[in-house]
Image 1 (cartoon, rainbow, N blue to C red):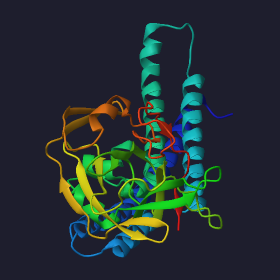
Image 2 (tube, rainbow, N blue to C red):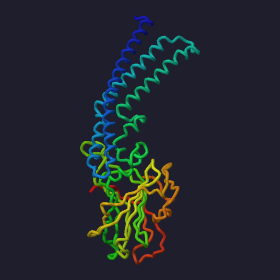
Image 3 (cartoon, rainbow, N blue to C red):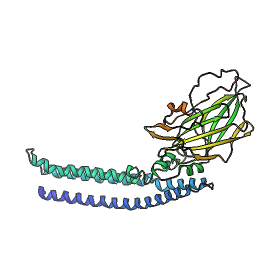
Length: 375
């Protein structure tokens, strides 16, 4: 039978060997992660530099960069699982041998010196479990410390994230998104003289995570107002089950309103779109003019994009706090108490455009339940 003192040294040597193997795995992971981080940083810098070229259409290049970023970000599941199981097995045996070595040398009674001797074991267990969690998060890039350095691919389409954590021009990215408006007219089933007008926001490159306010008006009336938060949720690829970080040519329904064409759709009819993002204090403003088509109105391809410095705001606890207003934005101040960032889109038309309805009827805010779709 092996002596207790000799057996303890054997356990210590086994533990040291396992720690050496675990450290070698940590070195391997650190080298691999260093290369991944370098490539991700290079791609992110290229994406940021490309976004400033707002005069040219760089949508395709930005789309490809996000796809390339995801290629280096996602680690294959099978080798990742094998590495994690190896780490877990090593940690389990290390903790087991440490505990067994202390139990073999335990001599009652339980006293204060014994607590002092056990304290290194407790510190070692905590350090080992923390090291395991650090390695696991480093492999899958789920470490919160790396969130701002190497954000997930989905964050590269988030305007609020790019504005809040990265010194990036919001207007430059939005120009690459090519935001436009489409008003589609459909006959109402119960009234042949009335039309249902669907309002859609079209994006050539899917950018989301921002609060918007839209007003359709002319010199006399405001016919439609919509507000809410744009959040795009794309399902994973049905074949490969890979997450979809970005899409092209998406449509975001903003609501609808009724009309009988009694209002003038001439040169006076226009739209103002305000975009509020975290990390900014002035919204980006789009001024749209429309051109007529068969059964639709489409915004022109050259909207006036500016920063509205009359409006000052901040976002705290998912609420939009406006500190100063712009009187030229129709119905903006009236709807301000309803502004919340909760992932929903709301709309209402302040004045009825149907002759049969009362012009003095109170506005009714409705939620737009149509999801984002791709055409």
